[in-house]
Every structure is written in C-alpha cells, then in structure tokens.
Image (tube, rainbow, N blue to C red; front, side, top):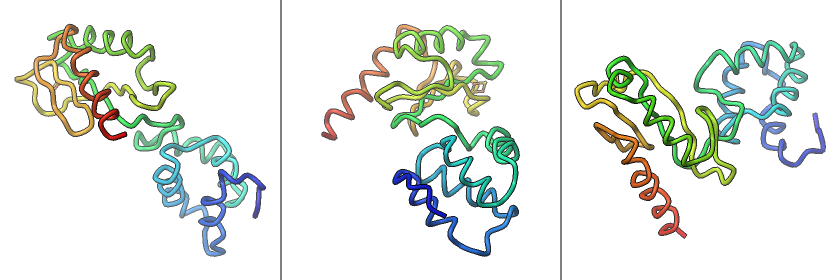
Amino acid sequence: MCTGNEFLQPLEAFLADDKLTESDLIEILHFTQNHFGYIPDEAQLLIAKRLKIPTSRVYGVVTFYSYFTQVPKGDNQISICLGTACYIKGAQNVLNEFEKQLGISSGETTADRHFSINPTRCLGDCSKAPVVMVNDDIYSRVEPGDVSKILAKYRSDSQEAR
Ligand code: FES
C-alpha cells in the first residue's frame, strides 16, 4: 500500500506486514505515536484502510487512551497538577499564567513545538502544592510569578543545545 505521501512512508512500511489484523491496532498506534510524536489524521485514515475497519474505530481508540495524542507534542512537556490539593492552593492561576505567557491553551503545543501544556491529576507531592512538572523536573509551591523564570530555564536550555 503506497499513498505517495513521503511523510507516511515509515508507517506504510510498518503496515506492510501481511499478518497485521485489527487486534494489532494498539501496537500500530504505539508505533505511530512513537515515530511521529502524535497520530496525524492521515495516519488514522491509512491504518483504518489497511486494517479494513472504520476510521471511527481508530479515532475512538486514539481518543480513549491519554497516551495517544492528535496534536504534535512540544519538546518540553509542562504538566500542571489540578488535583484537589493543588487546585485549592491556586493551581488554576498558575495554569492561566502558563497559557498567557505561551499564548496557547491546555492540551496545546506552541507553534515552534518547544512547549506543550498538559493539565494533570495528582503528582503525588500534595504537601508542596501547587506542583508543576516540566519534563522530569518538579517545581513545588509554584506561584504565577514563578512562571516566567521556569519558562526561561527551558528556553535557555534549548539555546545552549544549539
Ligand atoms: S494534588 Fe497536586 S500533587 Fe497531589
């Protein structure tokens, strides 16, 4: 199966295995997510066609599991805890400040793909609420006034890497 779309070639190669069936859908979606960093619409169409299942079935699985995403993820993942303890201590204001400074909403990625914002459930550090996690780094007792400093760290990290 060749779509003539160079972008999709790695997925086409993966789907070339004759033994693939609908029961392999999750595995195929994992491959797609890992390869592209998200699951593009064109990939969903291709997978549905190859498995001979409705596109709505593929879409249903993609939207059911939070691991899968339909928008590209940023290089830096900002997870803002909106669990009860963090919420009570003002996590929503912190989230609003990240959204304002990055010009995106929760669940979105900046146009340069540098940052994504993901609201999340309890990160297991409630005594230090509100808690924010950027990649593997944890920030405790975060206030809206801390947001620009946190973002600056990851902006400068990317410039040092260049
Ligand atoms: S509620 Fe935020 S760390 Fe537990």
